[in-house]
Picture (cartoon, rainbow, N blue to C red):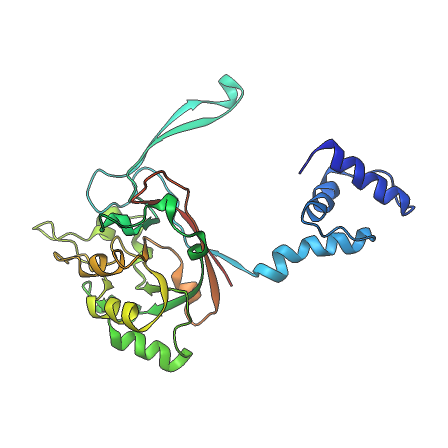
Length: 286
Ligand SMILES: [Zn+2]
């Protein structure tokens, strides 16, 4: 996109219009982006306006639903947090690179169908149209504040629909429990008891089945370590949602900002070969 040929074309176009024959790099990037997108029109001012349309008018405010990925983050099993090592630095080598060692299910991440289904799709083969979805955020933070084992139930879904209408087709349905506020405290986030059993909110099995049977969803998301409640030993939600070809998102952040709002979620999941899931960047466009 940034080839000298395109830059020359843009310069010629503007010169013909009797305007400055100098294109700054900044303006060139704007104009060049519009040209590359097939939006080049004979008036430079209109071209720049068109390129700004991509950000403001089409996307609106963006909320980052991802936690920072790094050492010391809470993980489902202790000791599975990512490790990074500095390989080269700008000061010593002229450029900077880290090497990461990580588990696929660390940080804000996706559970692909293959995580719980032998014939389920892996990350690299998921249909990318599933990665853009209307967000439905169901707020159970009030009961989660009283009960660490709180579940998102069918009644919670019905209460949300009574206020907002039926869950739209292709939605990503997320549980907001407020648990993301504990993220910086690994112990509090895992909230394990003396027997090692974790206690935090999640979807109830009935709620997951209701969504699978009665609504058209691409997946579900939670702001805790697991789609099921932490104390689950049967993993009913994982075992129904993932084999149904839907995906899960765990350890989401900032879902509270989406409560009562209309938003589109974009799941930026790298195409990990044969991935059972993996760390991803999740953005909500309000
Ligand atoms: Zn996972």
